[in-house]
Image (tube, rainbow, N blue to C red; front, side):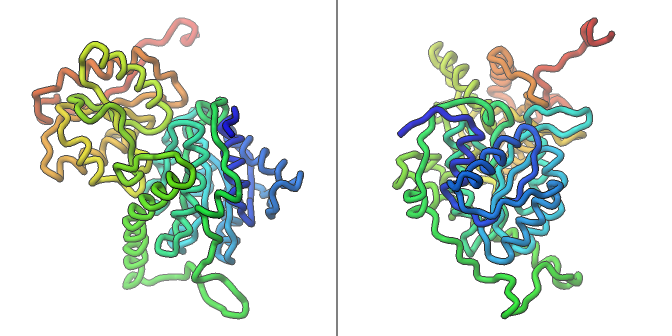
Amino acid sequence: MAKMMTGYDAVAEAVKACDPDVIPAYPITPQTDIVERISEMVADGELTSEYVRVDSEFNAASTALGASAAGARTFTATCSQGLKLMSEPLFSASGMRLPLVLAIANRSLSAPLSIWGDHTDTFAERDGGMIQFYAEDVQEAMDNIAMAYRVAEDEEISLPALSCLDGFILTHVQEKVEPFSRKEIREFLPERSPVHTLDPSDPKTMGAYARPEHWTETRYEVHQAQLKAKDKIAEAVEEFANIFDREYGLGYNGLLETYRAEDADVLLVALGSVCGTMKYIVDEYRQRGEKIGIVRPRVYRPFPTEELCEVLEDAEAIAVVEKDISLGYQGGLAIDIKSALYSNGSRIPILNFIVGLAGRDVKKDNIKNIVEQTKELRGKLPEDIEFGKEERWEPLRTELLEDDKK
């Protein structure tokens, strides 16, 4: 039965259904409500888990790592500076092949300090061997928790997974969702059955010192597990659709979704909640007979190279719209898309638009401006774009208001 739920309540309900054994928790805005709601579930007997109140995000990730190594299903949540504190143990977890699942309420990184959402926190972790899911709405944020467990705990994968939802825009909004029960989840998500665990009766070492002649092989194995995760995500999405009757990009192995993209000559590519605003603009252009569409990657790591090349190959111009920036270059998603397309022989011109940093509003007029700039590239080649103008900050204030100066 559908209910109105906030994003943080939906994530907490998903965690309850997945029934983790150990939940280390530390608060940080705008994630705090997730672990607070879970603490109420544990206190009220709705969820039988070991809820551990730790003294930092570093110790939250470290506690989850240790519990996972002992064979437990774990969950924790964080964002922004908290994710940076977790970075060291999360890199270790991927190298140790431990399937931690985290909800990330995406938030900007300081300085200057901001509590509002963008994707700079999780993009800074993209090289850590962690699977990354991005939700467009509250329902998907809920469902991605279950899929993250399903993929991360597969014995061929066994990697940490980040289930990302935009801070405040999704965590604190109320939307209609269809919760799932533990009974349904048991059909979709098997009990965790790790191959290797820390056990005093069968001593072993995890995450040990490695000499140069061995270390590269560990990274290679993590890389191969990431690539295998594409097939596991496809399987998980298909089975999820069969059980819950909700589809997520089945035509593209569950790695991306499209909106009015099949015949589009201008395509917008973006992650997360901004795609909701973009759909309204696309509909307006379509009513005027202009062929504009959207491609939304659901998964950023492993990167959906083949699927993106397939869906983007017939476009005349592409705009990559993203809430992150690799300072000194371009947005991370645009860098990866250009690499995928151009190494595959594509000659489609691509513009990169940086939007929504620190929660700045992305308005309909901003999206229209992006579309208009991108339309101008139809019939041109990548080298026709003035060097250094591939990335554009939209909107960018060129003058401070008088109140700001004061």
